[in-house]
Image (cartoon, rainbow, N blue to C red; front, side):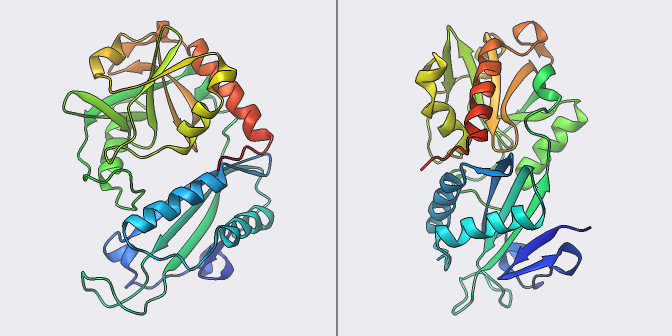
Length: 285
């Protein structure tokens, strides 16, 4: 049985789903996306993802005709129709379809596409071994805080990681690590989590926000600052966070072993707490 996807008000078998060749998301990358996790058939942090969606759309002056309640309902219907127990729901909204021209078209309805992807998050094998990371220059635009569908630079970074035998790329700029190609980058020193401040240079990660929300429960401190690649190589631990990796230990950076090549206790504890939080239907405002 094929997946049921959502396109502009209709639930359809994926083979029947279509959008216009003139859609601005396709032509210009003029759109925003989000990915919410589903664990145990429950949405995780969906409200926070939708709040970020609204912010990103506001930054590119794309008016959303759907309320958060409308979008949550579509998420829940897709979970039901696809019997999704564990995985993710991808949402993409573009400015709509119009003849190709750079300025915003008038009187055009946005395009909304959503679909599910079944994935093994909780018992992912990589969580037991850790992942390998390689560094690469950050080639993206200046507004990385907007979750734009313009993902060519991350695609190239992910391909570089794959060809290097790694699972993620850490992007670097002006001597410091910005973030992962599709994740937030963290290091650990003296029971203190370190990640760079939010700004236009990084995406405000929702899983990052969740980890910080239960920081007191974890027993770790937090230092919000930039860190260099060299500092990361000397760190006690490193890990990434994202909606699809949850909290994932990093054991190798550019071939350099981190924490004796095994997942560190900090990352493992944070992952345990996050999964427990998610199974209880974790909700961030």
